[in-house]
Image (cartoon, rainbow, N blue to C red; front, top):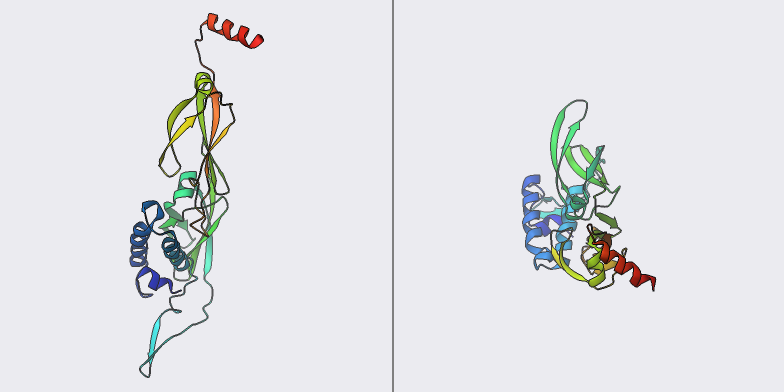
Length: 243
């Protein structure tokens, strides 16, 4: 697979042009927007191949000799790299986004904007090819900051939702948000116990290796005790459970 052909660009195009082409195609074919998951995976694989430096521009650059066109492959000395530790929120890890690296190489200081790939996990390392100089990569190690009320387990997302004693007892309905800013209707059955996990299929995070693989979202039910319960009602409940 020629990643440059997949994105509809040339190896000689600037990083800005290539990034623009990738974003346009990714937005067009994103499965969450009705696009084809296989096509989207191909686009993202091509982008990550170029981004990581695995797709050398020389590998896919056309050369003409004696009126014949051929594709030449050259062994290239690997770039040096600078390791950078970056903290991201769980929202950024799941959805991707932009991040500005503030780099001090000892010789120069500069800011570099990078794209966070969707589906990052804790301690994942991503290589950004030739973003510092043509011969120096940025190797970014991602650490996910703990987000209150959210937890990542593999590809699954766990979200905490708190309900009152009465809601647990009699049941209720609630619209809840997902990690991707979606909305889901949660139906809480009567007599639900605290700690119960309610499953929503395919609302977790996507796999970076295979975008068609997606985890589930689980809502963990927590309880809060109501305040100001009339003493008479408390006594009635106590007598009922004492039987």
